[in-house]
Image (cartoon, rainbow, N blue to C red; front, top):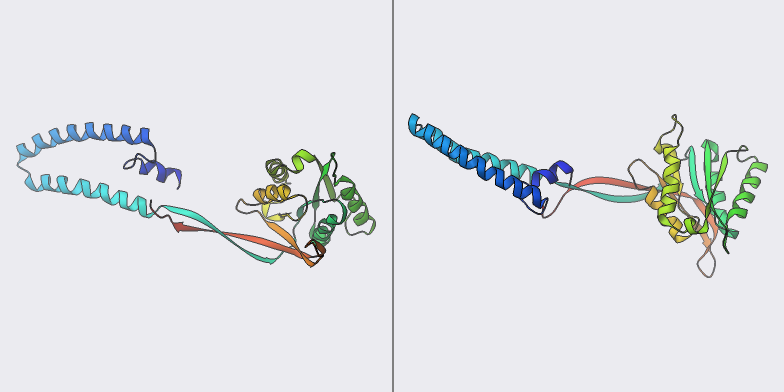
Length: 250
């Protein structure tokens, strides 16, 4: 519910804002008493029975109509999604996994390489499991093979504790959006949520949820006996559609 709708609801419901509801009720009570006394005297003096009836019936009718219209306009936002081949982006945010897990980052960078201005390769450092070495090796490999120009792949290193923290990941990606050059918009960025840990994926997904942002995932073309991907497919874009729907019970 929008803020103006919530404020308007306080005129008839303490649920929206109890303090506002009681203040409004108190003020309305005073104003009604004052107006009633004034109009009573005026109408009796003028013998205006038709005007009196119009006020008695018309004003409550107008108030009721306003309440009905406000309630009918209450909407809530509903999100749905579908998958489609990823449209190539100018800025890619991708996460590095150690060992064979780096293949999904490689696939994503190669796929978007023809249009890329920057690829942000986020990796973990420290601890028992680190993806920093895999990230640096991938950057060197793609530069040697001339898939990308030197400097296009920017490695962002996060401590393991932050790499496994959804909120820290969301904040890291948010910083990338906030520092975009003037000639780029959020639609020029795509976040690949495939690499990293499960918590990493959750944070990346949260960062890509606001309207105008883009997400993608890489599904495996083949898996091993344990269900782990052995050959990544092309990136698939997760398109989130937002629509307004009449809110129930409001």
